[in-house]
Length: 291
Image (cartoon, rainbow, N blue to C red):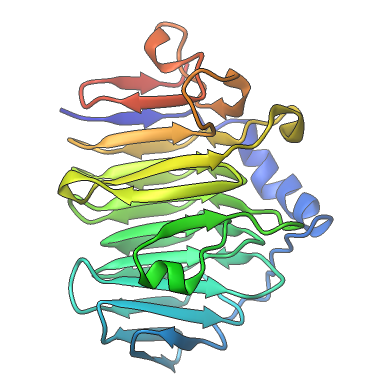
């Protein structure tokens, strides 16, 4: 009863650790390397407080849902961000207003749900460790009012990169959800969401819903067109995804029957049920392994 998607460490490593910096510095997403913890946080909906001490930033959330606007949100390898939330279903929305992408190289801990939003991109480096009830990392924007009203509609911001890359470790609690959504999404690290769900979704607009048992679903309502991608896939998994007893969804489309170049899991040719589509729903007993 193990759901596992495994990709070989391949040429994407060279892109992330080499070309990544050059490409992003020449585009609208600039990932800063002189990192300091999250700065300029202001609670704009709900209630809570933010405190920084040494290398730790602590967010004490008082309301069930809370939205924070940050001037920047970066976490160095020796830094930690901790969310103390009322319960496992509490959600903290973190809208990052910086003109630069966010680099997460340290720890993020939360007993509830965390949403990180930066249209200029989010990069979880190989040193990052994320232990949360659940997490959504998005290169698409959501309005705080929509979030507070339970409308999880994420839209592109024109002129931004919208890329989300995970090269670290993301671990959701039992039954928790992990979603990486943006104009382009890559996983080169490890994602664990036992009895929960993992969603990697690329598009210009995405709508998130919570189904039976609290599992998260993602529907791409405005897709990335093939001529906008060039030769690169919109969703690329070359890392490992473990969701024992749960489900894994990789999507870059409003429907199941569109061109295969948009999603790349490097699935073995001996597993035809896992290839030749832009959208897969992996059932619990399936094991798709990179050749």
